[in-house]
Image (cartoon, rainbow, N blue to C red):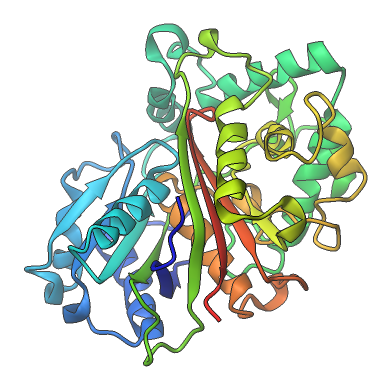
Length: 391
């Protein structure tokens, strides 16, 4: 689907991390006010609010679409709705806002993605996240979603050989990139050797996946102001959608080849075709590296390598920041963190910063077009945005 009249005109982002005692209301304020300010608009200029919040027990408060007005009373009578689609919750909220604008009901919308995860102990976090699997068949895994992706990695290793070097290289790349992201949860360059070698500080978690292969349990929020046209008063350059795509696949892993993200591959094929673009046109990709094996399979889904040969993409340096197609110059979920409801919105903020030339130390050289891939579950709900500067 082409989106010639959909623009990102402002954005805000809190630091991601273990934010002790952070309330959702404060996270909303800290993300939304900078978004409004950068767009040059006031709360009364917003026609509707779309909240991406997974929750599922992370916090006791439900009905969180009502919280923006609690956090900022200027939104008291602004229509607001909450969207949820597992780890793609943030993108689902963006899509809902874009649909409302495309329908002509709204001209300017506010999208908020947020999550407060660290109020729970690690086993409780795992038990909450496993609800995004097909619980009848997969819900008993004590490792939670790490167990799901550990199983994916085990299947891939059995079919195509040990990929530990590639997974370690992906983790090391993303942590090195995250050093330059002021919002990142983990701003530390661990290096390849640490990520490759099991140790007391980097033990195996599930299957061949070590702790360094897993994204972080994070708190945080991000916000976007979207508009049907660029705004003359905005303080940042506008970014527009060239295309957006959403493809779903079976939820049960038993009904799919666990070594392929077929829905993701379809999203990439459709999205690039709709944009009239190829991978060679992209200057960067922000992709969903919830686990390093996910980024490896996404290389194959986007068409950088045939099935089973994704390792060569990272080992040849293609996706490094100085490579042919930098992937996750922000550090990705691996370094930046993964507050579930905030992730899709955060990825779009990172892309907008790149395309507007405001990414600071994260900036890549070639930014005429970029892509965001966000997925819910194990590539069950795949969202792809192809974005470019508005002028």
